Image 1: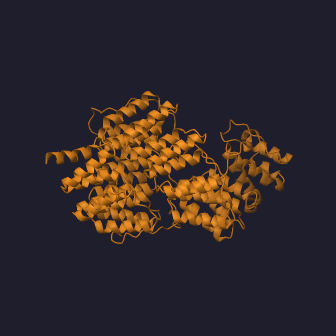
Image 2 (image 1 turned 90 degrees about the horizontal axis):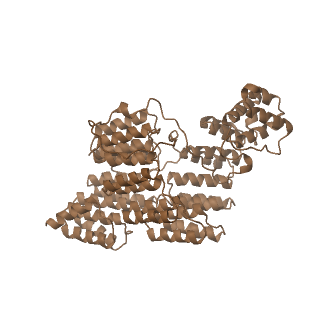
Image 3 (image 1 turned 135 degrees about the vertical axis):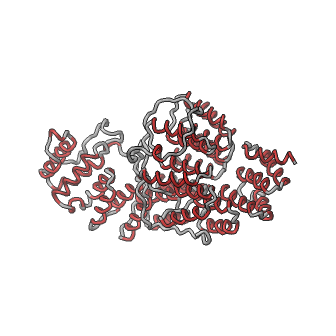
Length: 622
């Protein structure tokens, strides 16, 4: 595998079970973490595990993909919202519906209620219950009672099938919903779309794609909402852009006109790879189709430019957004701050935070956590702790992402006592460690060269009920390569591909980083070519790994050639790459080139992290 580096993209591979999601309870304000005087507490499998498996929950519900929520169909806030019975219901159906929603102790069983209902009204009752999110138990009971009374034919009715699929999916019974659809004699687009949406909401994106293919292969023409859901799935799967374009071509070929949601989702498909040119083209096409951009459009476009490190373009979109009468939100500024932080422009990120505050936009936990992570990356630990203190002082409670950032902050520096204190606080605050927590622990122990702890965390992660997904595999690849276990890293990579998981840019970068550590520059170049063939644009981390591969192999001429491309902006001028030039030239004692890269950083007014400053100490000493 390490020799061929072939990366198949098997869309038809079976999907893993859904990733457990994490509740977001209100938690009490706590004081910032301070070093403990207790003896060091290192990794203990039993201390990291909860007594029970994580329970998949969700702190919020997103609107259904492709169509707005209709307040006339019961609202979205649960049982406390008034619900007007659909006027089309017959008197028999109204009585049955009210009885199903009433206290079970005061009325007959769902089976008895439905047995007295004319079968012609059954579809109306099931559909009404499916539209009411506040009573999932009653809806599920009604579906099962209908099946007991009339068999599967009742659920296969064209008007009942989509509703029954939605009800089963909301109850977490996706396998049952899938089997119901598969056994139906002639499911229509709405039934397939209901199952597609259910798999998408559960994060089972490959299963969603398989349902779509089954639908198309069965000769069922997708509707607009179907295409919108699939495009959303593609954006989450990091499907190559050419496949996204192919789907849009199929959509147009079916005579399905795109709506604003379609265009917004297409822009989102560009985010992960920073395809700003493609996103700009979609934006222009959207306006040509006379769809006015909304807040989602502008925020998505800003995110794309941010991911591509096109900061001036992102600020331009912000101004255009304001001129269009669409005021920016905290989400808008968080995207901008994240982009500046990832490019090491911390001063600009802080200025953006101050700007949003002047506009009356209060920083939230995402704002603070992003800044904490950015300060951590540049070695500014005191500033990171101060940001955390400010966050707490302003009454902004940490969330799971904050705790994960703090675990990383302490862990990568080998401060396991402080790291475990954060882990304990995470649990005490009512959170369950999520896959990011586990991946962070994998990365922490890997960075510290503790390969046995890496293996131990991975085993305990699986015992806790988490199924390894792309990010876990990427963490394992990085961890084992940092421990010098190159073959083991490549074996993990192979297992990921065999599991049918799409590689994304982070996967490629993890493999490139492993190749760089071994000085395997030829394989790194081969992987670069493969990335471009598969419509993956190498980013600054990709080029950084290639530079390190050349440095470790003492390929100075290749380093020089790549450096000239960076300076001449034939490769997009990422500040991170210039920092890498300082480090790799310093590594091979090429002090003149180290000084040249350092001066370029100063010209760009980049913040200088501790690694760059240490490299310059060596230059000054000579």
